[in-house]
Length: 202
Length: 202
DNA sequence: AAATTTAATAAACAGTGTTCAGAAAATAAA
DNA sequence: TTTATTTTCTGAACACTGTTTATTAAATTT
Image 1: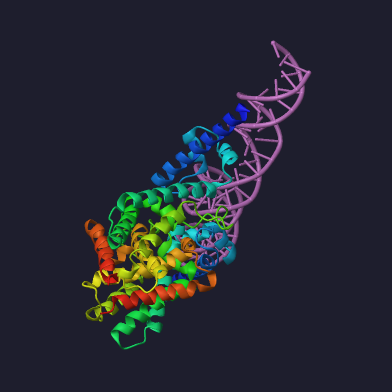
Image 2: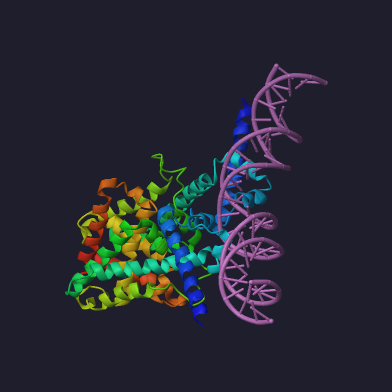
C-alpha cells in the first residue's frame, strides 16, 4: 500500500517539523522557557496536535538530547585528528570543553537539565550518548599506558568530570565566586584543562 | 519604642517560619516541585502573605542557598581536622564530595540550579559562598608548594571542577552512561577523587 | 470609642502541561 | 459520485503555576 507509506512518511515529516522547532527554541530560549504553546505557534498547529506525535514535553527533550549527543560526537570526529594517542586525548577534552562553551543551551539540556524521567529510566538510556562516551573510553584506552592513572575507567570519569565541572560551573554561573574577569574566563578554563592534561601524563 | 522592636522581631520570626518551611520542602521535593501555595499550606497562611515577606520565589531560593552554603562551610570546619596542609586539602575535597552525595537536593539547589537572577547579579552574590570558597583557596595556598600545579587559582578551580563534575553528573544521572553498578557508585567516586589527589601531589 | 495604620487574604490574571469531545479532512466503500 | 468510515486536528477545559491587587481583619494610635 503506497498510501500507508506516504502516511508514515508524512508522520515522520510532522515529527521532524515539531522537533526542529523545539530544538531551535530550546537552544534560543532554553527548555524551561519554551512552552508547548510556543512550539505550536511556531509551526502553526494547535498545541494538542503536538501530543499526537510526542507523548509529552519530556519526550521532546529526550529527542533533542539525542540529536545533540550526535552533534557532540560529530564535533569529536571533526576535532580529534591526531594520530598520537595522547594527543588525541588532549584534542578530545578540548573539543568537549569547546562544545560546552560554544553551545551553552545545548550543553545545558544535554548534561545539566534534570533527566526526562518518563522517557529515560526504562533501561532505555540516551540515544547517541553511548557513542560519544565510547569515543572517550576508546581514546583513553589507547593512551592509558602513557598516563599516570592506574585504571582507564576512572581516568575517563576523571577527565569527563573535570571538563563537565568547569563548563557547568561556568554555565550555571557558580564560577563567579572565583572572581575571574569575563574576558579571561575562556583562557582560565583552557589553562585549567591544559594543567590537568599535563599532570596526568607520565 | 518596644512595640516597633516586637514588630520587627515578629517580622523576622515570620521570615524564618517561611524560609524553614521552604528549605524543608526544597530538600524533600526539590525547588521546581515546591510551589508557593505548597509552602503557604504548610505554614497555614495564604500564598499572598509570603509575598509580604519575600519579593518572589527566587528570593526564597537565594535565602535557602545562603543557609546551605553555611552548612557546607560548617561541614568543612567539622571534617578538615588535620594539621598537615596536604592532608587538609584531601579532607576538604572528600568533605565536599561527601556533602554532595549525602545532601543531593541541597547540593542541587546550591550548585546546579539556574541561579536566581532577580536576587543575584546586582554585584550582590551568594551569601556564605565566599567563605566556603575561601576555605578552599586558603587550604590550597598552604600546600601549593607540595603540589605539581603551577598556579594556586587554577589548582583550586581544578579541584573544585573535579568534585563538582563527579557529583553533578551523578545527581543529574548522566553518569549512568559509564554503567557503574549502583552499589559501587560511591566507591568509584571516592576512588576517582583519591586518584586525582594522588596525581596532583609532587 | 473612633480613627488610623498594619497585616492577611480572596480573587483574579496570565501563564503552564495535558486531556478529550467534537469538528474537519482524507480515505474507503457503495 | 455519494455515502460511510477512518484519520487528523483543534477548541475548550482541567488542574496547576507565580504573582498582583482590592478588600477585609486585626492591631495600634489618637
